[in-house]
Image (cartoon, rainbow, N blue to C red; front, side):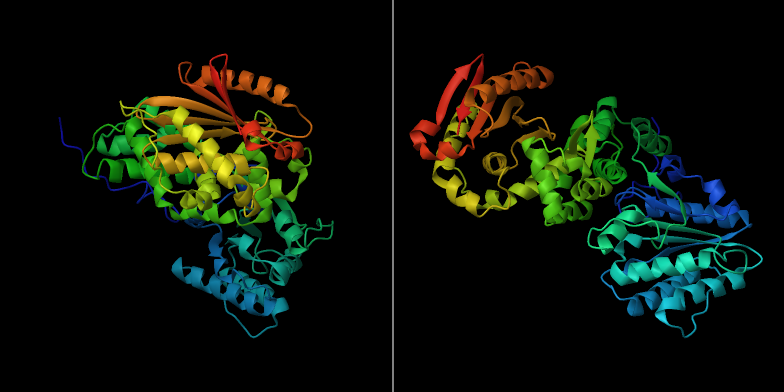
Length: 523
């Protein structure tokens, strides 16, 4: 067998992708709602939005190169990220104009001139000058990271683009402008007006389309790794490919990161053995523990009260009719944190679910002492009965005081149990979580030394009875066990959150029984 060639390209997880350096798929194929051919020929302005790390910058720079190679128009990519946190137009407009000069220089394009002007007209003058310099070719400007603009700076920026729109044309003003960021433009405007919806006279009512950049399909994931196979001969198992898609739902950064870690760290870059499911699972765990920049940014989002409310609702399986119409829902959808699965709201993918759950439980986890009691059986397997009985003691001693200090009220039982499990297992086992708003439950699938355990969490509220919750929970955990592992020991943890429950003694509240082969853990 011939020795595999050392690859020239790699799976990229930082910044835009370039076909000469990275394995990549044409990002134009993932555009939804865009008509690229019309934006230039019909002189249209448009918006592109998608979550972070999905390929927006890669698409913009790729399309820019394609336009400029055609020699019929001149396109320039311009990021306005340097204006983050600059809310006043007097400081923001000069920064944007300097950015246009910098990017024109980097891409070997004619550079626009900046003359002395008021902030309210500076962008207009620079874009007009740039159009004149490039005539007789039309100018297309692709503004990236527009979501960093806010307040008066955003409104001023949009008003100057709208002001030049009526007179756009070759030698006059850009014939086409793209505004690109995480959220649709109307959401920026609503945020800049303290939640007041935009009116028909908003500063950018001239847009033609609001397009979206979708995730990879499962076929895309396969085609992406196939490029490495063709280049090096390294193959990947079918179950490993399926797991990559299952964990990512095609989120491009996750896909690239799993592949990159599997072939560069788990296997090392000079080992071209077949990539297996075990390699991908190890890469996933490394990503979670390393808290890479993209995942760390997701965790940071949990400081936003709107996002915390959304995560708590999904975590507890609560039913909230107003949630889908809330700003929290729109924000989390635009950030790529949530999605609809068969009509139910859930976390966008299992990897995000793991990262966000760990972030929500981290504070409690570090306050839990290392267990001194025996939680393994003599054969080294997990003694789940002992673990959950010890949790009941822990809940009795700490829950009331800790709940007073928690940012989460409804999800507190779920979070404390997860933190307790995570602290005891301490990297030696794996916990997979399944939850969705409106289902009234949370499922945990615990894997420890090749043995599986199922735990379902249910809450008793004032509008329900213990008998109803118990019956429903037993049916749900039985269905979940049949789906994931019919032989796995199953537990139903029930937390009584009714006000009258607090009037009972702890001996009355805590309980342990078995019904239909399922252990009920009353808390």
